[in-house]
Image (cartoon, rainbow, N blue to C red; front, side, top):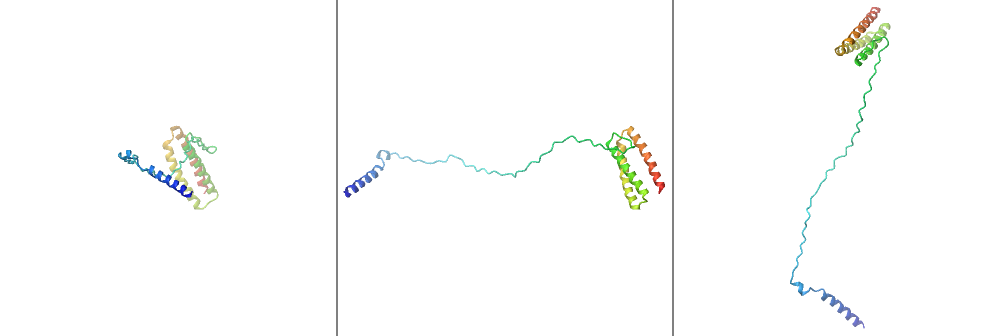
Length: 156
């Protein structure tokens, strides 16, 4: 029985091998299949640029108009530069008065001399920009202050 089973298995095996054999009808035609690559290979290299964070640019607000107040008794001017000059000159006169009353040393008068030079430069620029009516007011103010400085000089 073993021989029969083995024989039938062998027969089946041989039958399957024979059936895989080429068909004589198709042997005459030779089919050659070529694989053709129809895709073009393009190498794309992307450069990564460094990420730069954009700074937020604040919206420009209308600048607040500086209000430069002049000391009491000083004339008021339309020009901001004139008001600043009057304020600075008043501070200079106050420091000069303190230096004279305290009979201060020469160092404090030298500092006042430097401030005086700065005020003189400011005054020259200021006069060239002021309208006629304001120049007249400034001249009166400067005459009064010159008298005040002369009085302080006589005290020394």
